[in-house]
Length: 123
Image (tube, rainbow, N blue to C red; front, side):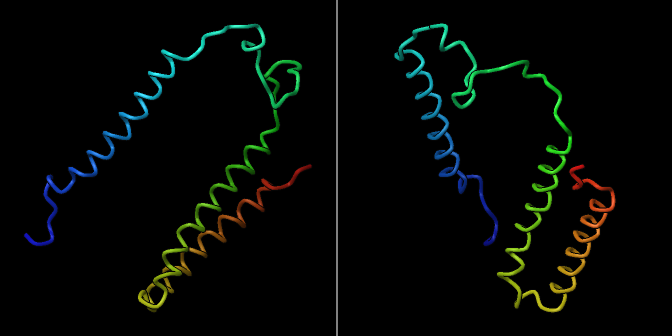
């Protein structure tokens, strides 16, 4: 039973989370109750970095922007998985190297697929 965690071991974490949530809820409630409530026409208009709003917000946009953003997040997050491997490179040995080559090969195949489909062409 030496390596097992008991529910009582989690009390400090639960207490810290309860204090954090309590602080957020209390702060939001108090500021909402005691804060000024001045409703003006300027406050009710949308604000876009100081630029006057022109047209409808529902104007169709090119899907290319979103596709590139999603692909960036996808391939950027994969880099996060390389850090633990790099830190434990020597401890993982030959098996770790083979697994990382498989991982990188899979990423490379995905990247080649994206390029072949023309997802990054901005024509």
